[in-house]
Length: 238
Image 1: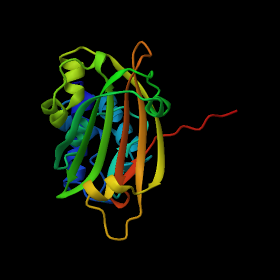
Image 2 (image 1 turned 30 degrees about the vertical axis):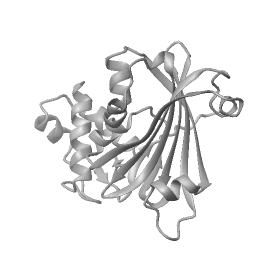
Image 3 (image 1 turned 120 degrees about the vertical axis):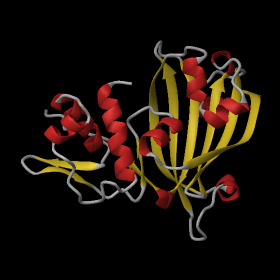
Image 4 (image 1 turned 30 degrees about the horizontal axis):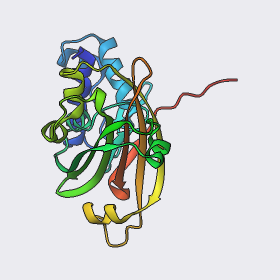
C-alpha cells in the first residue's frame, strides 16, 4: 500500500469514528506530514481524495473542514470491492450468501448482462448487514471461465481477493448505471426495509478486464436512506 493510501485510510477511519467530527478542521498539511512522517505532497494527495469522496471541503487559507457523513458514502466513479469500502470507511458489516449456483445465460439474461446466449455463469446473491440491518442486496454474475474455483466462502469474504489474488485477473474498469427503482419482492424478502419504503437505489455494473473482456455483471440494490452516492466531476471547458 502506498503512503498516501495509508494516510487516506487512517483519516477516513478517524472521520467515520468521529475522532474528527462534522465541521471540525483537520490538522494542517504540515502537522499531518509530521504526524505521518511523510511529505506535504503525499498528505495533499490523500486530502484531495478525501475531498473527492465528499468527506472534507478544503478552503485556501482556512483548512480542511469535515463534512456531514451520516450516510455511508458509496463512490460511483471508482471500481472498489465491498470489502475494500468497508475497510477504508471503518463500518461494521456482515455478508450472507443466499444463493450460489451455476446457470446458463438465456436470451433475456444476455440482453441484460451483455453475455453471450448459452454461456455458463456463476450466479451469486448476497445481502449485506450494516449497523445491524440488512441494507444491501447484491446479485453478481461471473462468467465461469474467468472464475474457476470460486466458492461460497470466497463470496462471503471477497470475490475480488480470490479473482485477483489467486487467479491473477486484471480487473480494469466498469460501466455503471444508477437508478431509483420500485422495491421488488426480493427487496422486501431479504432487506430490512422501512414500512414506508417503496423504492431502492439500484447500481448496475458491467465489469471488464484489462483486455476489454466483459466478465462480470452486478446489480446492487440499496436501502434509500442509508447511503449517499458520490462522484467527483471536473468541469470540461469548451
